[in-house]
Amino acid sequence: MTPKLPKVLIIVLNWNGLTDTLTCLKSLAGLDYPAYEVLVVDNGSTDSSPAIIRERFPAVMVVENDVNLGYAGGNNIGLYRALRQGSDYALLLNNDTEVAPDFLRHLVNVAESDPQVGIAGPTIYYYDSPDRIWSAGGSIDWLHGRTAMVGLNEWDIGQFGTQPRPVDFVTGCALLVKRAVLERIGGLDERFFTYFEETEWCVRAQWAGFEIVHVPAARIWHKIPLDARDSSPAVHYYMVRNRLLFLKSAHAGWRAWWHTLFGEYLRWVVTWSIRPRWRHKRAHRNATLRGVADVVLGRWGPVAERRVR
Image (cartoon, rainbow, N blue to C red):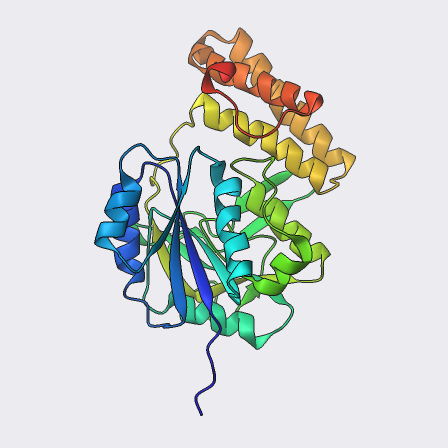
C-alpha cells in the first residue's frame, strides 16, 4: 500500500498584485507533489483580484480580507485555517515567485525525515538571474543585532551542497512550517505587520526545540530587483522599528542594542541631518526617528505612510 502523503496548505498572500499572483498560481499547478491545496489570502485588494483568481483558478480557495492585515496578519488567516482543516504543513509563499516542480516534494521529504525539523526553506534565486542566489536561509548576528541572507548575490556553484543544513531563520518568501510548530508556538506576531516577523517566528520555534533548515535541492525564483534599490521611507520605518521589536522579543543582549541604536541609527540621523549631499535622505531620517519613538511608546502594527515623512 502506498503511504499517505502529508497534506500541505500553500498560502499565497495577495495585495493588488494580480499579475504576479496569477503567474505564481500557474507555476504551482505544475508541482509534482499531489497532496496540496492552495489558499490565496487577499489583503483588501482594489484591483478585482479575488474575482479574477476564482475565474482563472477555480480549484484555488480565496479568502478576502476587508483591509490590508500586513504580512503577519494576512498569513495568520491561512495558518489558522491550515490547523482547522487538518493540514500537516503550511507553506508561506510570496506571490511574486515561481517554483520548480519538485521544490515542495524536497521540502516535505526533509521535514518528514526528522521530527525535530520544524521549518524548512528552499534556495531562492533571482528571477532575472536564475543562477544567482538571493537566499539560502538566513543568519543572525547577535553581537550587532543584524540579520542577513546567506549566499546573497552568490552564483550557485554547489557551495551549499545537497543535504539539508541548519540556519538561523528562513525567509517568509518561501517557508514550510510543520503543524506541530503551529500547535506549540502559534502564528506570526502581528505587531510586526511586515518585516522581521518570520525571523522572530523562527527564533521562537528554536526555543521550542525545533530545527530550522535550508534545503538546497528545493528551488524557487523571486521577482526581486537585482540592484539594491533604496527603500521608501515607509519601508525604512518598518525595518527600523521592527528590528528593535525583534531584538526586544528575542531578548538580545545589550551589545546588539548598543550597536543598533548608536552604531547605526544615531549615525544615520546625524549624517542625514548635517551633510548636504544626503539632503535627499531627510525623509528616511524622519522615518528612523519615528520608528525608534514608536518602539519607546509601544506603537505597533500598521502605520500611515504620512506619519513617516
